[in-house]
Length: 317
Image 1 (cartoon, rainbow, N blue to C red):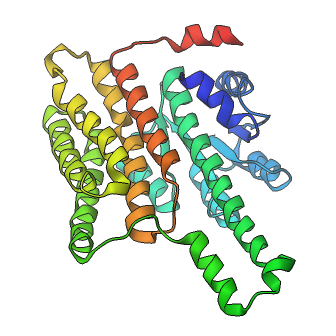
Image 2 (cartoon, rainbow, N blue to C red):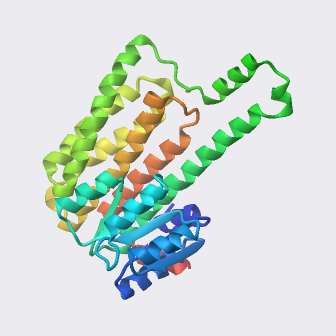
């Protein structure tokens, strides 16, 4: 499925606000997002945006950094104080490490540097919307579990039975022996190594870094392939490792190399999977995580080798 079609599906019930002082760019972003989101708000500075935010239910915030009255950093900090889980996408021409550190401290995970193309914008919005929808579904699942415990039928059971039902609803699909438990520690180390390598891509896409990522992914695959419940996602990770290893950097343009920065989204998928399954151990159905990772791999391949043009897909609307 294409980025446009996926985004249209995930964003159809969500709201977004565009915060950008450049009126032309503001109008452009509003025009693009209106193709996908149920409700689109806009503001030209942080003060105006904060007022709109407090009076409306807004799922996603897209904001510039440099703006009059209140900049994007201060706005993001205020939004996170109101809702620590607020999804924020920052668009900025600043590449200074000072700004990056501030945004990371606030909890901003999505940063797009100007100038950007529609393909990058849509891809990042897709990932944010996808996470938002999946998070909402998880919240609904937990509410259903809580509601189940309060029904008349469950109320007639003993307190012990209620606890057993709740535990059963949230148990992990994995049954790990002592040897697997030891492997988990190594898996968490590999996850951290992968994060460090992916972060290096922000300072330039080098062949040594990509080879390092491929090597770590191969090790993660080896571990996951030995656990029955994680063999499917291990195959996707194996495909990713092979794809990165097969790239001939000498034949890639600078633009194509820059697309490999999308590895940060793939890292997010893998880290989320490892955290939910091996740390929190509270997810039974992991198919949505596997689908998300496979979709990310497909988008990465298409983006690097320019297999499609986003502009042509807009004709669907």
